[in-house]
Length: 75
Image (tube, rainbow, N blue to C red; front, side):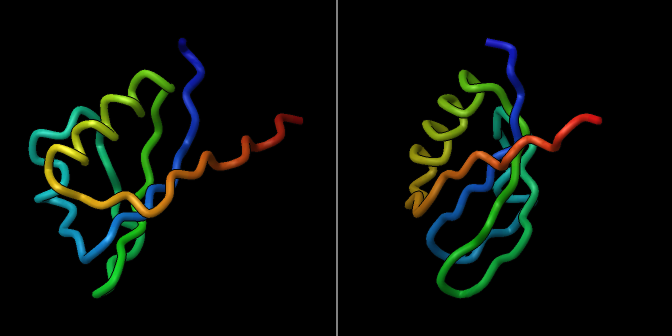
């Protein structure tokens, strides 16, 4: 699987980007982080997403949503 897509991941609670990326198999960007949830973005193929979800679960994060962003049209 080589199809790389951008994904938005929403997790429960506030998140610090440096803490999140320490030991992460993929580079995550925190788009917004509030007291109740945080929105993250990452570019990965499907196998990478499986590994990332396992990593986040192992750290104790509660996943609220995982959404694949639509591909931009190439003209």
